[in-house]
Image (cartoon, rainbow, N blue to C red):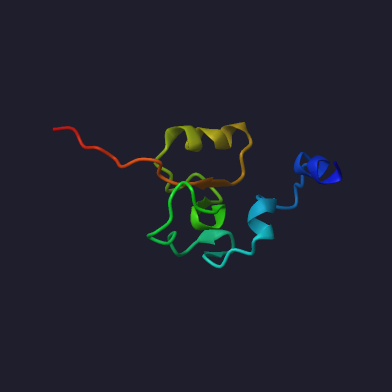
Length: 86
């Protein structure tokens, strides 16, 4: 029960407590410097998704807009291939 309570505690000393806990080696100073492995998918562990500490470089408009609502970090991955119109 205590672990569940901790999930909903605000820690304003970090932009992502989850990212901090798995000690990401693809990010330097909370900036992703290496992309996710090619074999990663939406079913992969969050450590293999894209990591964004700000909205720069995000293509998804919903994720970009989330920063206005107080989001400080996102994990994201493509769930489908982009299709170009003919």
